[in-house]
Amino acid sequence: MKNQGLGSWIARRRVKSEGDIALIHGDLSYRYEEFAERIDRFANALAERGVAKGHRVVYLGNNHPDFLTTFFACGMLGAIFVPLNTRLAAGELEYMIDDCGARLLVTHHDVRELARAAAWTSAIEHRIVVGGPAEMPAVENIEDVLAAASAAEPVVDVGHDDPAMILYTSGTTGRPKGALLTHGNLTWNSLNVLVDYDVTSNERALMIAPMFHVASLSMGALPTLLKGGTLVLQQKVDAGAVLAAIKQYRITSLSGVPTTFQMLAEHPDWKTADLSSLSKLTCGGSSVPLRVIDAYEQRGLSFSSGYGMTETSPGATALPYRKAREHVGSAGLSHFFTDVRIVGDDGLPVPTGEAGEIEVSGPNVMREYWLRPDATRDAHHGEWLRSGDIGILDEDGFLTISDRLKDMIISGGENIYPAEIEQLIMERPEIDSVAVIGVPDERWGEAPLAVAVKRSEITADDVLEHLKGRIAKYKLPRGVVFVDELPRTASGKIRKNVLRGKYTLD
Image (cartoon, rainbow, N blue to C red; front, side):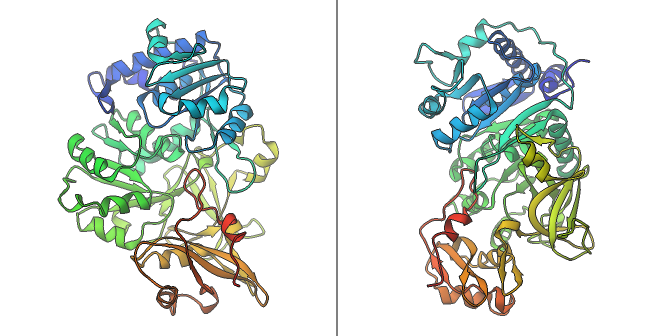
């Protein structure tokens, strides 16, 4: 068996897409044949340093062509790629490096001090730096490594059942778990994206979200390269730079979270920016506020949003562009090759329109957590993956996310899903972000409290008045607390457990 995994994708594109640009990053650009040779050389270099099938290779860095060089080189060898979040603390990274048992680290020069703090006392044996000089005797520069390596294409048997990547879930409590995704998981996810988002070989995708998160890598980069499109990489979200890049490179697709799209719409250049090339806007993380949808529709653009998680590689549902306004707040329909259902406490499917836990099944769903058999067992319900999220399916199959199971508030025996309240509060343009949490209440056990960040002047009474008559009285927050910022995980999720430990109704 030859390589049937992701590592062979660019090699297969070498002739099919010869002369076409695969990657652009600042002044750097690589045609498909150049990118393929770079991957071959790096795969051979990794093998010379002892990396073999099943071994783990850590990458610590932001968006850069050699993030993908390392990813595909690992795939060529059947090694397991482990991208790490550059926003984490050194101690958190050190835990992940030790947990996965990596022996080789590739890091970008910009985060070399973080890498040194996280990995210099670990079991890492080889360190390769991207985008700058090696600076230390124990470190090699990737350009020197590539120049010295063979350009022959490695021949390793890799199949869809072989592990391709470990992605550590950020979590809000306890140690992170490594979701082990196979070549098949990531391939089927890419096929879902191709079918449901109509990705073509003419795609020019601007990658602004960090690829160390599965959504950016697996929903954006991989499907585009599979089809022979072009990726334009940026290291951070700069609204002005994004608007300029859309015009310069004739960007066709852009992905982000609601905050990203809000920042673009509020930039001084928004009204005059050339957005004529854009045809695909996809948003994940949470539903898009109606005011943001309005801003983009005024420019002739519509959103597709979706739902997923690291463990599903990550796509589970997608909202068709033409249904965006009709189904505001919905996460859409199941991806083409994926199934979604809602189950009750007894594990059985609930009737249409009733809330329950979301479960996902399909070839894109992970097989296991790395070295965590107990967590793997708890996460699965037969062939279905338990999401830990509460949702509702309507009669047409559209999914609405109610909330995380652990974030549900039980007040006087009634279940309250904070996401419903948060969506309504976010309709107010004065609110930048909000989290609704459950706090102790002597009479009801728990009661909802809103913790919000203001963009402009608004009072707690204004917020509560906005909610009155739109939700049941028992769902109304007992108060609104305004703060300068909300505590978040490295991936941007609000740490509601921190808020619950800080605020009361007193």
